Length: 339
Image 1 (spheres, rainbow, N blue to C red):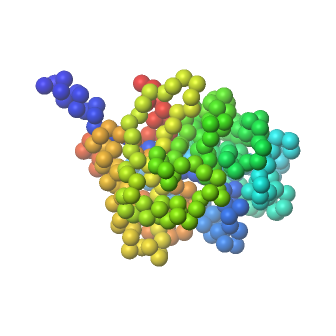
Image 2 (cartoon, one colour):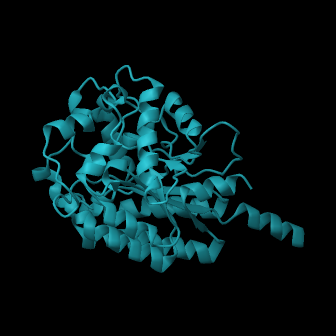
Image 3 (cartoon, rainbow, N blue to C red):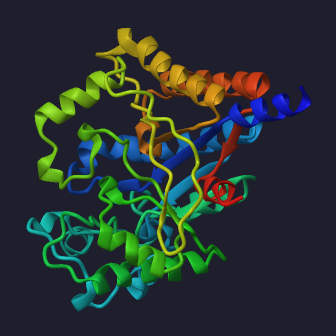
């Protein structure tokens, strides 16, 4: 009977993995303008401390996948870390390049002068909170699938630049999140070569496969929108399997935490139910539920967004007490899989 109980406990519990794509305006300059989106970017400066307070209070472990360019302290340091011109990415649409953006836009001198592009103080705040991991979100918000004729050496140079700026904080990231979730075989190999060991892959469903930005059709976007509220594609929970030597380990996303919308506020309870039901399924079956979002998603409507986040965290705490669910960073999930 004792052996049966041990076996049962191994099958339950599960893991709650959280990752955030920390980008400031480096993740939005090709989609928005400061005028149209700047309020959300500035809102990160209060949303991130609130998030960290919640995480610290409830023991939430999280990976903050951080763009290297926002980690610099001033423009001199930014310029010093830029790869040489022949090792910078090329895109069919030059406006997707952060280097083109730097050349054509006024970037301020430091965080005080330009809070949209510099975030050193927030990186430091994250590192001071227990169980928070700084991950790699590439140096330049590099698009691995949208690039045009980019050799592996170009992506290597980007990862090297990220490693150099991270080292100035005594950080050595082992987890990566690909911008726009554009993971591809070549990029995975380069990451492993550079000492990264785990990445966040997409949900394992046709509609969530990694695609070039232009391939995100209205039909795909509509399906994903509905799927946030009604379960069309499954829970996207999974067991941790042992890592394979020489292969970047995948901790796939389970659900994007869609920001609160006034237009869709009457559906908010469905969104929360969609997430908590998947979390419960993971806890009961000893599986992983991986939730992710961008800090700028909570830059506005903070009362509503943090009410939602608190409900999700409260549900995790209930599952922790009922089933022994654990909170893990991406690297901790990789380590757990290797045990």
